[in-house]
Structures are given as C-alpha cells and as structure tokens.
Length: 434
Image 1 (cartoon, rainbow, N blue to C red):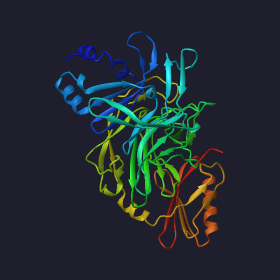
Image 2: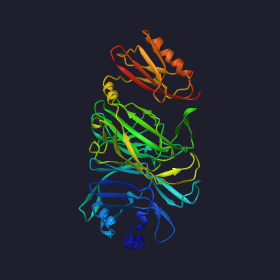
Image 3: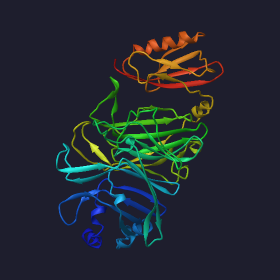
Image 4: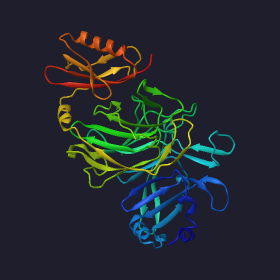
C-alpha cells in the first residue's frame, strides 16, 4: 500500500496525525493522542488541534507490517479540552493526566511577534477515557490550576513514592511569564495530591528529554536519570557546573535522587552522548527487565549489567546555542550496572547535606545528631580521592574539608564521611565560580 493511498484513506485524520508536539499515553492496547500543532488540510493556517485519537495497536501493527489498510485501527473525537500542544500526558492508576502545554495558533517564528498567538493552559487536567472499542469519550474530567503549572515542553516520568506507591513526576518546562527561563521545581502527582516541590530546584535538563526511572525499595530512594536535552546548567571540565540563561543543548546524563525523607540532590555520573542529543527523544523500556507495574525499574532485582531499553528519536543540535538542528537517526541501547556492594552499605548510610549547595566560597555541613564521623574523603567527579583526613575532633575535620574545597576550582566534588560504627554519608558538592 503506497503512502499516497494511505493518506486518501485517512483524509479526515491527516492533520492531527501530522501534528507536532501532541500529547499521548497508552492504556492497554489503545494509544490515545491528544491535540498537537499543525497545518490545516484545507488551507495554510496553523493551529492546535482539538482532537483525541484512539489507535488500536493490536490492529495497527500487523496492518503496517503486512501492508494492508490500517484505517480501522483509528477513531477520533473532537473536544476543546484536548486543544493542547507541548504538554505531557501519562496514565496513573487508570486516570490520564494532561500536564501543562499551550494552545498555539499561527506560523511559528523564533522571534515572536504577530505571526502567532499562544495561551498556556496553566493546568493539570485529570480524566478517564471510556472506550468500548467502537465509541469512546472523556469522563470524570477535572482541571487543577496553579501558577507553577504555566509550563510546556517539560518531561514526565513514572516514579515510586518511598512507601512503594506509584506516582508521576513532571520536571522542568518553559517559560516563566516574566523571563525566558525554565521552571525548576519538580511537580509530584499521586492519585491523592498534586504537589510542587518547594524545597528543590532542578539544575539540569529542564526541556523534554528521556528519563530512566529506578526505585530502590530497600532505602525508599528514587533515581531518575535524565539524558541530554536543553538545560539551564551544563558541565565544563575547566569550570565545573556553568549556568547559561540561553539554555543550551547538552549531552550530559544527570541523575535526580529523591531520598525517602523528600529531599533531593542531582548527581553527574560523567556520562554523555558525545553529541548534543536527547531533546524530544524518548526512553522505551524493555518488557523483559524487572520493573513495577508503572514501568519503574526495580533496582532490587537488577543483579548484573542489564540492557533495560532504548533511547530513540529527538533532535540533534550542532552547537549548544542558536544552532542548526536536525532529526536524530540514532537508536541507543541503555544499560544499567548495579553496584550491589554499595547498595548494602546504603542500609547504614545517613543523610547529611551542606548549605548552600551549590556554593562559591563558604558552606556549612549539616549532620544528624547521631552521626560523628572521624574520617572524611573528598573525591573528584570520577570518584578519585583527592584529599582525606582522619581526626577525633569533628569540628576540625569539617573546617579543614571546607577550607580545602573553598580553594578548589569550580566543579563537582563528593564528600565521603564515615564514623567508627560503620555509618557513612556521601554528599555531592557543586563549587561555583566566586
């Protein structure tokens, strides 16, 4: 079946299916595609579609493979509540969440101006889809508004709460109403609450990029690995973590660690694509790897190096800022190698932190009352020890570590502390230029 014949069959569906930046989520065999920005089929006007399309994957896949007519796999309704592009959509416990996005109309141009209009939803929309295989409709619709929801082009991914309950995390997004900067406070969505994390501001990858979610049920720790994308910060070997308000394309992999007590920290493992990739790419989980029902990897079941899935698609940029770009044609296999011995040590790990972090010249180390380390190491980003000290005087130990880091070049470092009872603490420290 030729492509031309395909579009003859799908004339009424052509516009929404050719749209960019739609929202989509899968429930069982049905893929639901909401909205998206594109061109009308009748003239040259551009708009955000108000459609919701249901795709029967069990019908579509064999039809495409066998070259037969796939028209029966598609159904579509119109609903102005779906007139959104640039948002994210995900399924949680039988309910769909359409997060952020905007209604964009007219011809896009990078300088703004009169060629287009846009209205942000500033909402998180929750609903169910009733579908009997012939007709489908939106049911039990609710919309939640907040100034922090004025976002588009962020990233959404499943997660587990410390007690093992499925939830969603929405990260980043652009742009703040009064300045061209991203949003940095994560939004955590459960079936009971929608909460903005007021205590943490994400440093890396605030624009749509692949996220690999991993949960350690032994410690209640959630690890979310972000792959490249567009970021307010990026890492430079000679300067450390650098802020750039132009939000460059990056190739860094960063890991957002959310502890069981609700505190968060980011970690740079020293990995990257080698090219400016990741923006608008997607992570596809392998069904054969150990994971929870919401597609979060189960760290406790990863015993050795494991291929967990693929990263595909997105944008390839040539230089970080104001750059020519093209669609990426690369497919990446993603592997996780668990450090089993380190995981066992974490059972005795205590949570300590420094303030402020990042810092420029001075900081203070905050320790739990029951933790008095007598040994401290400072590691570079690759995990190599660059300084260590043993002492019985805790104040002397901490002040010497602070003085040592205060004299170092900007970059990412780690403080590793241990007490005589075997308790340990590991803190990532970001040294900024003073």
